[in-house]
Image 1 (cartoon, rainbow, N blue to C red):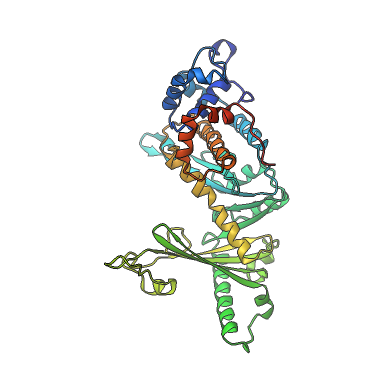
Image 2 (image 1 turned 90 degrees about the vertical axis):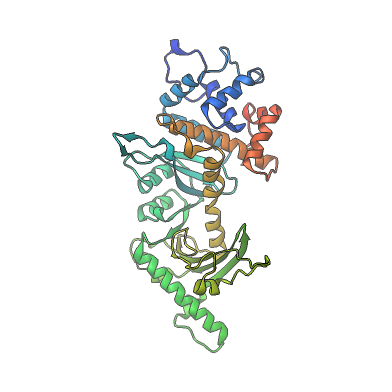
Amino acid sequence: MESVPDPRCSREKKHVLAEILTCLVAGYVTGHTTLRRCLAWCCRHEKWLKKGLCLKNGIASVATASRLLCRIDEELFLFAFMEWIGEILNTKGIHLAIDGKAIRAAMQKTQGVGAKTPLLLHALDTATGLVVAQLPLKEKANEITGIPELLRLLDIRGSIITIDAIGTQTGIMEQIREQGGHFELMVKRNQPVSYEEIVAQMSELQTESKRMKSDPEYRPKYPETMERYEVYETSEKNRDRYEYRSYQVCNDPEFVTKTKKEWGFIKSVGCVRQTRILLVRDTEGNDITPDPETFRKEGTVRQPRPTSGDSSRDDFQVTGIISDMELTAEEMARIKRSHWAVENILHHVLDDTFREDRSPAKGSKNNLALIRKFAYNLIRIAMIRLSLTCPVTEVMDLFSDDPALLGRYLFNGIESFY
């Protein structure tokens, strides 16, 4: 925190900026999700905090902390964050998931007209769950223009980059490769021609594969393509539903028109067909959930009309996948599933536990979001080091109840994952 430039002139400095920021991180780590609650906790624990901080003039007021968060240079604060996490985690040769997240309560309104909801781009290491970068999108920018800017901040040599369908742009793919990285990207109806080509070809290959299994004498239309085609299937019961996934991959991408011109670097093309079926029980409590094929034809009492498409809300979802690496179906499945760590263990935690989506802060929203990332990463590091599998809220309770544990991660150096 000492590397963050102080925006105040010398005569204004009653409290040290690094100490204010550290106190805020301590407040969030211990489960306090507003500036007022964070600083109130610090006031109650001021004596203990002085073991690691000077706090010559005590704990700063809410007004002082809020005013400073509005004035701190966002870019320099981000560089300080990235320098800190860069000493703990090397971004080379890892799987980085990139995705955007809105802060809805921070949207500013002028004369009754709603402005654009503030959006943050995050880059997450899927193996550790640590955030390695955050980038606020400017008012007239979008994810397509913001992703290249975020990538330029990162050393991605040897890393695999995954982005949802909005990032499936030729320029973004070329930039990833120029920076020495690899990618696995999703193709949906925002790329209509390529999407239809992938889905149609994979359906045909699926039919050919079934005929070859049922009839050993059958000769497929595309014998060379069939040699480079494979399928990997998974099924699981997830809370109140069953999820079935079929991953198809072909390492002969010639059937996609764009691979002949714009996407000449594509080596693997795939398709994942996912079916979600809500659990159905009879009057005696027995599980009578139908199999995927029956469900798609007839539906259930809970889902009378199964929806089909490429949206995550669809009961039967079909998504195309492209990569510049030759992947097996199992490898493609593992990378795609890992990508959603950015939603499941980051964005969900930020909104549900840190209550970020309800934060009304406007001028300080981006710097306050970065404070949350400091706290989030400290919690994740503690969970990894201590082999904890409990919810984040329980880890916050541990930090709140055990000052020695909090001091170990707040004041002492953290061993790197290199």
